[in-house]
Image (cartoon, rainbow, N blue to C red; front, side, top):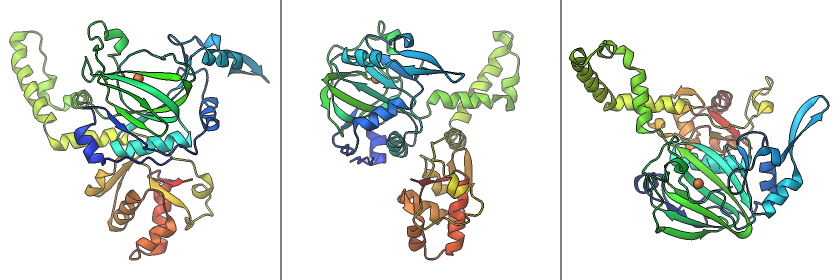
Length: 383
Ligand SMILES: [Fe+2]
């Protein structure tokens, strides 16, 4: 499913990312998305996992809608269909968090991942009643909500605790930082619309008594405190940080020296970029398996019609002649750089088109390079 964002990534990062909400009407075409797809997404989840929930005035205990049974010597779990249907008819919301291996959801996640340069975690929500599933709350991650079926009313309020982190859930903090009385946005998200909401902004998405299905993509940029923790992890290499500080008398000089060292360390762009590279190297994407193409020793070449894309959300490293994807950092020579740049510009480009657009590169060399990068999980074949 192609997402059409009428704002550049740079413009979004400068003016909206982590700063304020953005409503993008008609960002994706949902004509081909149906309840068949939505049912499939829920049906393929592990119903016993904490990521699978039925919510109605709080989370409904699994024992009320999941049964266990013996399947030829194997203990399995399945939804008690009548219980799920009754709960939904009574206004409950069905929720799947941390969705993996779902091509439609993965396609949306990949496009938002590229747009933001961040790791993305996907969730899906279905409801048919009028009841709000969570009442007003804030999330501790920035969220892109794609309305794929039906409509939902969103009431949004400004943050009372800016930039909350995962330990600062609104249910635990709402007494000290209550939701503002006046909403700043109140609108109906229609099928095909996309709504970006930074973490900390209060919101209450309300079903309108009609079928609704939306996919919510949480994005996770590295935080300043992650950078500090990373810097502290490197502390033992600096002598002042190994000093004993048994009392203030003996401690104040080493503490002042340490503070200066940490401040200098954090303010170095080289150190920041090292941190950023390590953060990126820790990211993994759901690259599709292609054992027939990449696992068969007799298949030496990629076919012309085979389409490929880069298996990474961060391509700004190309300026420095390398790419980091699924834990692998690949230094690129002239051929590699020209190839990867073209694939970055045209995700899903076919091998035939690559050969056509790069006439200066020996075709066999180019095919071998693309196949090698696919096998290394730096490129991925597109289905
Ligand atoms: Fe939320």
